[in-house]
Image 1 (cartoon, rainbow, N blue to C red):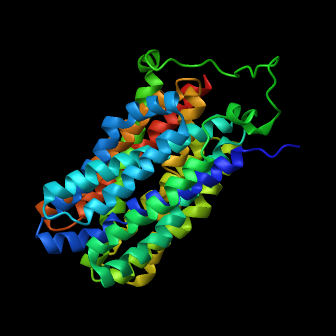
Image 2 (cartoon, one colour):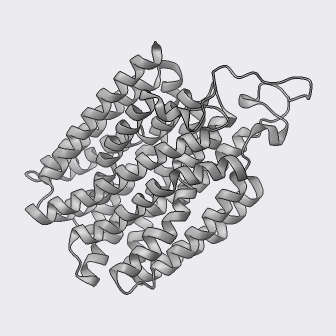
Image 3 (spheres, one colour):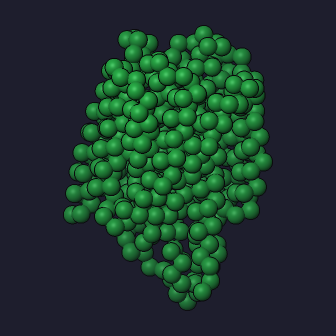
Length: 408
């Protein structure tokens, strides 16, 4: 039996996400050094991350269309090169506007090309029956990347400053991600004369008939399910990215050391890696809806623990936060991507998923900025974290409604 190349695609996505998103989610560790050096308020420092995710909202459909037209290799190689250059330039920034240009625009354009949504498009073409598992395995790279890069970045900043650290991270991207994607990234099983899930070889006289009707990138905009999905994505990511950016700062504010807070946040990634795979495996068997709901329970528990840290700084609760948030956050983008593919797989899926990348970007931009704005206005994160908790609950009810509409 011929080896199914889809597992190589999973491995390439795993490494790409480990490095690119492992780096992205260390922004919370850069947060305090940037604030201290430039004297920015927290809303301004948060805006760098927020604008970078707002860029996702702008370029999501365009990148999805480029994926449909040009393929994974070109998009991922170009994205890797742009990300590496943008990170190096970020280390030279002397003002807020320069940081916005170098990190929020240039580096983030590369991050958008390498995003979970873009990899989700490719993986959904290689896998159907085992789609949740494949996406879970690949997206587990995000958690391992967070676990590796969080303490690494904290130590690099302590020894070489945040500028030298950004240069080092850019070099890692250029040396590793550019060649890996140039050599092994593939868009579709047809490129390797295979079918999704490796079921059989393609032969000219046989066509793989779709099991579901395909959806046009324009007509899908009249589908109420799409708009409900976009609202769910917006709310879920607003909450999750608020926590990602502000959790370390909050733990430092309540009395923990920066090293301890960074280590705890790194442990989130350690939990995320196996949890992402597990959520994918479970969702293939029990459905995306209930898997997402269980993940939401974990996110709510994590936010509740952060709120409790304001009155009790026992380190045990910080570690419980890492466990709960690692479990919960790992269910967000992986299951949303799988759910989107279940609904809209077809020739235009890259463009359609681009609409969801827009919602991911808007939520990811709103959450960090809103958390910083509320902190600057009140001097604490209490209101911000309550907002995140409520947004998570509303998103979960949205997924349940979507699940009912899918079953009709």
